[in-house]
Amino acid sequence: MQALFQIATQGPGLYEFTDRAQTWVAGLDRQNGLLTLFVQHTSCSLLIQENADPEVQADLQAFFHRLVPPSTDPSMHYLRHTYEGPDDMPAHIKAAMMPVSLSLPVHQGRILLGTWQGIYLFEHRTASHQRNVVAHLT
Amino acid sequence: MQALFQIATQGPGLYEFTDRAQTWVAGLDRQNGLLTLFVQHTSCSLLIQENADPEVQADLQAFFHRLVPPSTDPSMHYLRHTYEGPDDMPAHIKAAMMPVSLSLPVHQGRILLGTWQGIYLFEHRTASHQRNVVAHLT
Amino acid sequence: MQALFQIATQGPGLYEFTDRAQTWVAGLDRQNGLLTLFVQHTSCSLLIQENADPEVQADLQAFFHRLVPPSTDPSMHYLRHTYEGPDDMPAHIKAAMMPVSLSLPVHQGRILLGTWQGIYLFEHRTASHQRNVVAHLT
Image 1 (cartoon, rainbow over the protein chains, first blue to last red):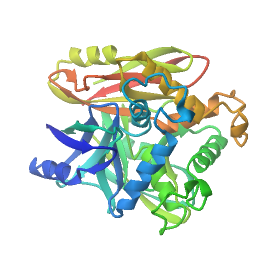
Image 2 (image 1 turned 90 degrees about the horizontal axis):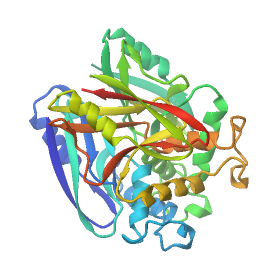
Image 3 (image 1 turned 135 degrees about the vertical axis):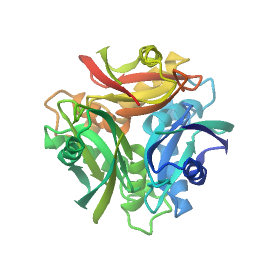
Image 4 (image 1 turned 90 degrees about the vertical axis):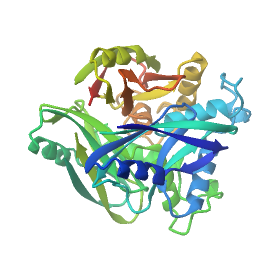
């Protein structure tokens, strides 16, 4: 079973879609299975992260912005792929450091997330984007 | 087929559980399949790493401790999620940079690991924890 | 269904094998499925990355070389696993930060990659190597 989740993003940050994924899985009426999520882009990521305190998400974004600053930052002077904007190559780097696919066991129609786990798309680009996540249940 | 591995951790570091995973897979008497491991927490990671020289594990921990120091370190002054301890937000950041799920092919009842590969839980928190890893074999 | 892709590398950089993976999947004549790729080493990685501009690949390599320099660099003085060469422990660190396994949905015999996505082995070692990637289709 496969589905496509479209997620509209408005700038950098984490966008949760746990409920959409869980609702889709529950509707398939399978007992056990494996849910795989795959994002069809190279400038955003998929994350499992804490869903309790929104400051965790702000801190994650702040850390990776400092670790991989825009290509206009003097420390990034060596980057050559800069013509798509100062946030483009850093977005590719972040997309290499964080997952593009996640595999999550399903039991009795429920994704086996831990108590504090949510499923997020992590947008790395500044402009608004429409992002495609393919869901596959075996 | 699903199972839960509980792993007790006593502070930061790599905890190997290759044998437990391999024993469980062998007992299922499947020829071919795909083993997925998923950790139900957002402050530890799953790693495939070298199992020959323990210094590799010490060096890994040292590198990530320097890359993402405790929130009491002046370089981390911008973090806001600090009330769960100076090691908490760095643990979430490390959990974003390293895998929460691993997918490993199985052939004739054996996980197809390379010669020097072991399966580890990488604990990022200072206090002792009981960690849950869900195993799923298709 | 399982297969082994052998990839010969000559020094650090990204080696694309999208076509080999796609050709193998197409030849199996399955409609839908999940392709998992797993690399049997701890000093290289698997990446989904942009396949349009080769400068993206050069920039990725440059960034990670600066983030994790050779163990002869003064900033890496604390590393202890150095007897396999100055590029060995940094390779293990990069292999912890980037994927060892990728899970990719397949539809009508095609891997559901986005328009600009290619599948790469990211070699972190300086010497030439023969790398094994196990492919598994469910």
